[in-house]
Length: 165
Image (tube, rainbow, N blue to C red; front, side, top):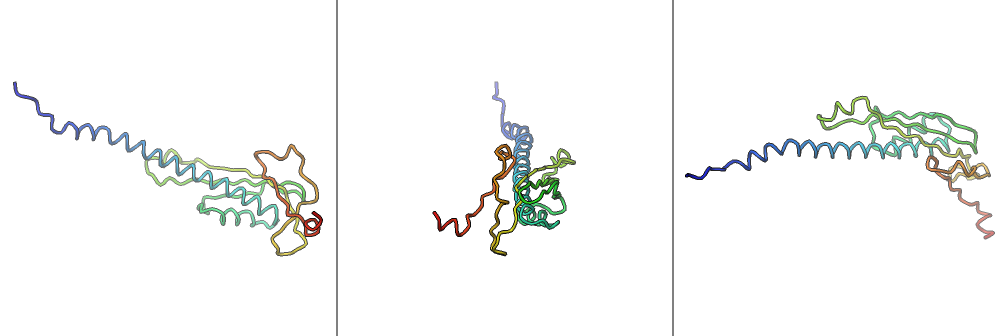
């Protein structure tokens, strides 16, 4: 009884397994790209909130968000939700439509939006104009406001306070 030839069996097995493995690898890459975009949206929100806390100009928050990241400006929306007087809070909402560079997953991401909301304490300019230093309104925020959704503002001590210590 002659032995059956099995030449080509490995090629057929590779052909059957290559497609699912390729889809899994592409899915992992796409998840990584979306995750990176979400991290950049969070960073853009923090930078926009910081800019809005020290500068009440209408375009300051969007400009800071664009400068801080490499997100596509045509897909990025930066909105100042609320801005109180110095000592109050400013809230920024950043929304981004992530692009899909992988054709297989473009339909899954269609209409999806990544978003971030950042809140920060509004500051007033210090005495040294243009020095880059700012100071808070003179009181600490209530303890219940310091949490995961807020960034604590650190205030540089004045020159007289540094000499007294």
